[in-house]
Amino acid sequence: MLREFLRRPAEIAMIWPDTSTCARRMAEQVDYAQAQVIVEWGCGTGRVTREILRRKREATLYLGFEKNPRFFRHLQRLQGPNVHFIPDDVFRTPLYLQRHGYTKADYLISTLPATLLDAQRLFALAAQIVRHRFVQYQYVTALALGRWLRPHMQRFFPQVRLCFCPWNLPPVVILVGTAVRSAPSAVRKQP
Ligand SMILES: C[S@@+](CC[C@H](N)C(=O)[O-])C[C@H]1O[C@@H](n2cnc3c(N)ncnc32)[C@H](O)[C@@H]1O
Image (cartoon, rainbow, N blue to C red; front, side, top):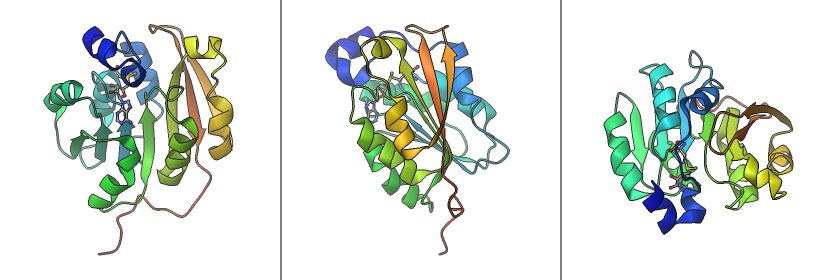
């Protein structure tokens, strides 16, 4: 973990995996009875991933993006029915949704270091592909530096709820954006 962080600090952006409390809070934002497609961005060591996979129905499609090769290899242990890990950049998510016959995901859960990436581009993409909720966290340390994700998120998700999780290193604020109502589209495309 530390080795990966030292190699690519801006991309990994963590020195310690998320705690199970934080991972549960993230995963609990999904309505598993309804979800047909769940996408996760930045699975890392798989803390949040495990919580999602423990709750998801077998029939629900899960796509997990992690471009770090070591973390990607480690994630293979979590394989299951309709579970796909993708060693590619999250900006290529629409391509992988299409490969599975979808244009949108019902839920998108992200622990990407959005404050260090192009948040506008990231959230614009999230708004394009999310049907119900977009869940993104940020470390409070970024808040202290004045990098607040909420205004960026509100440009694309007018309704943003906040949830503070102090039991993480560093503590996090979880932002839950509700998608503007649009036509149902996690539904499979017509052949
Ligand atoms: C803060 S860590 C994730 C923490 C994870 N929830 C855990 O507990 O291990 C962010 C992850 O996002 C991945 N990442 C960063 N930019 C990415 C991108 N553009 N596409 C895919 N993965 C990315 C990094 O490799 C890193 O593993």
